[in-house]
Length: 232
Length: 293
Image 1 (spheres, rainbow over the protein chains, first blue to last red):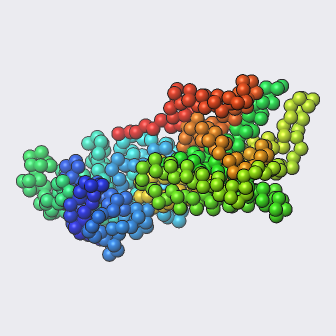
Image 2 (image 1 turned 180 degrees about the vertical axis):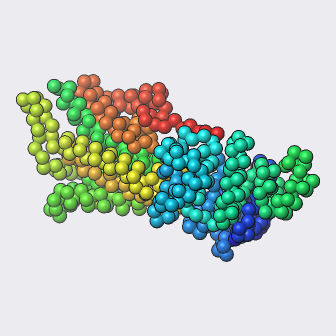
Image 3 (image 1 turned 90 degrees about the vertical axis):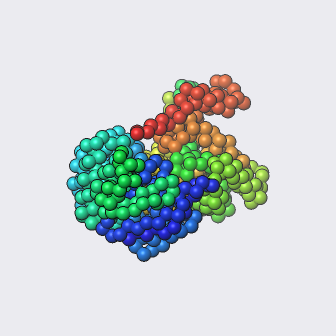
């Protein structure tokens, strides 16, 4: 579904991503793990068109998207829930969801019911200004907003960041449910343990390059990964 | 009674500043730039209205619509030709370009219409209303200006809170990258903002020249700067802020002209601005950005 080949990305003169290749097949959950600053978020930003690679190929459902503008990609079915959630803090929960449905013809009650079914808490708070939500609720809103357009592939950047353990579990449960209902997931996480538990396959990223790859279970039991990311 | 008269006149000129300030503040909120050529769009709008009534002999309301149409196109064109290629460059480059566009418009107007002032005939057909036994005069221009500003304010508020495009504009203004991830085209949104701001500038130009009937290529410059001040005063980026800032500025200006000095009125207006910004750096209704971790 998504295929990245030998992608190089620069921030000005800084060579941030040095020839990364990976694939996400339809129906998979693929995790990208690695330390802070390894380039995980940069990879997602480049795939979603917020940044562009200097060289290399990115294709999505057979179409070359390496230089496509970000706003066009959602129409092809690629959604990106960015790092730090980036919900519209001054707009209400309902308005945030409406923005998620911007490319749809209308904001349908069916879609709203679907996201409220995943996240009942948001239904109670639909009139509230998003900036007043708790961190967990903001993450739920960010995911709901992306769901409104029924994406084929959902890229999640650090969905567990800053959340209490119980909320982290809840978010991961919902990622599993989304996956069951047919959404392909590309997950970027610092919480490697959690990510490897649910991932079909995973890639380990270190300073701009992929150093290891395998199934979630393989990586979870590999010595290198255990030492570096799972606390021995 | 005299004070009430000054107050009404102040609100009226302030309402013109407010309409101009709305354009400044919307463009700042969405394109994150100060469009210093905005004041000169006012002047172009007034010239178009002048030409349509004087040379084509068409009725006043047609001239207003023509002025709005021309200014809308001009606004979009300026953004596409001058500002869009500079997106992503340091804001200083955009600012200098905006000042360049401002001079370009002034000199262009001088080339087309000459530098001699034109006598702009008011487009308002209403007779003045005399109150309190003739002591209080409310001119037709004052009534129309205040009404227009209220209508524009209500219209813009409804537009940004009820329509899909209006909400998308707020989304772009708050977080450009996140808005793109929603499928919103930033370029189209910015064009739309310039279109609305410039159409409002055309209305402001006609209202301004109906009150102060001298029209020349520099007509828009000073009101433009005052309206920019009003936008900062009210909190740049905030629509109600622009409205409040404009009206307060008009009142302060009128009172300082009446009671202190005509020559020093601008100095007084800007001193008030400096004091307000020292106390409230984000302006009267400006948002203090808060982030939640």
